[in-house]
View (tube, rainbow, N blue to C red):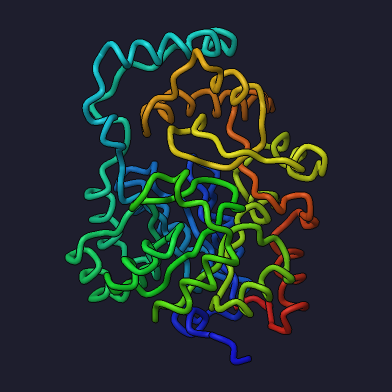
Length: 360
């Protein structure tokens, strides 16, 4: 069966491997550059960064690798409900979170003018710094933005959770599409239908999308090793994206306590889909935060209001090495995790795939 190497050719990769981008401060320059230097596509989740921070981050990554890397943004930066949120609704959310803030010795945040950076402002920074690739989730940038990327030599990578979204991205003319199945850790980046109505498996999504579109696919969801990568390519993907496997590496920005959970097979045996973390559907390990905020008497705020309240808890929990009041992203194949750093993970992938992971 012929192998689709269009992604590797497009980005000059030595391995058909993409590192999933991590938002919320979990991405690091070291992780991104390490993956790129070993032949894959390192990615940095930049959706919480200001335009100036995007420029600084791109410069830092470029100073650490000469290979291709991607910066990732969220196209839909607010749920519609968040744009019209009343002061009473904000105060109701604040009241729900007050006990957790008190427990961690934190002050509740004041209501901001905006809860999230503007995608329009962020993408202007992207066009200015010209990273090798712009990956994006939760929508499709305008034709103007996609054209501007093409003119500047920036490869564009969208994300789909169902066939209709893959077809929409294909029609828009992006360079690659991440076909992300419900097995994946992190967010379900649906944009045409509610995420709960877009729960296709990675294998089904890759097979059905590959038969209907021309744009090369990057399989994502439930892939942590070379077996998963090889299987996804047999199904029609040009490359595979690994998230949880790279999150578990020492180079990521997660906490040691979180890594300990990722390597605890019993703890990650059952993950769950929840809106607790940010207001948008995501997969992670159940903990106290999920158990208590999903009670019938609680209300999950829309994105990014929910994320506005959870973010300080995450930061304080990381500093205290706690895992009960933070997000614990993990995919369904986390029990098969083996590698604790990028070098050993990439070596295992390259040796099994018959590729070369020598530094580029």
